[in-house]
Image 1 (cartoon, helix red, strand yellow):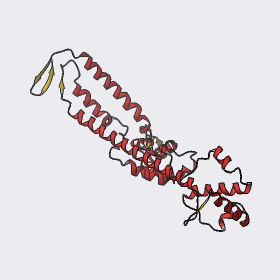
Image 2 (cartoon, one colour):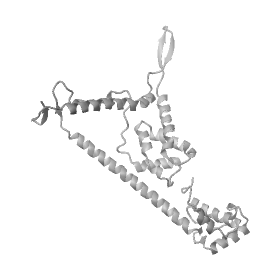
Image 3 (cartoon, one colour):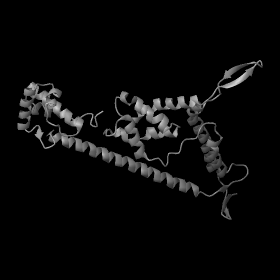
Image 4 (cartoon, helix red, strand yellow):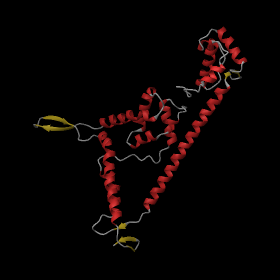
Length: 303
């Protein structure tokens, strides 16, 4: 796929600029412009260009002479070129680089904010309440044990992931290394898949390579369902049948109640439900705290 898959063509500019050209001259002119965008460099002037433009050598030479004379095509040391093509390509990659830098800046700010929140949570003092109520510490402890007590797998930690390197690898897998689409700077879908247990080397990159050519427009969201299926197929293959003995002689195959792949599908719902219950308990504790606060050896006691 071309690094610049499309270019601007204002109909009024084209009609006025090509008004004095014959049909064959218009065709040659437009084909040369498209080839410049596709290659992102001046075109070497040789006999092959006439064939690529669908014209005889004489038709091509006559049309090119007119286009050069009118300034529509420039003859440079590197080859045939167009000034506006150069400006548009430069603007395209300038915007692409600015979008990349902005995305990386947002990611850095989110990472720093997350670290500040974690530091703030770590500094919260232990609170002891009367025996008739659950303490805040107990509620927090239960929250920390939610993932440990569940049969579903815990989310993968992606805090140390290099978004820029991840984007480059995904672009390379799709063949979109220099694609200017701003959608490709948004790596949220890929990050979410990694958190959900999708392996970058086994599930994500091979799937992107396999089906990227089907995508109508470049976006990582296109690959979500296929990558999830690749993960489930891989994990499902790891779940062996569980044989049980019947009548002492023969064996019947029984599936496990929940495969590893099934546990990923149920993870979000079960975890969120437990968090909602614990947060409701926290709100109840906060609303019912009417006692007098005393301090004793660094421990806050509510009497």
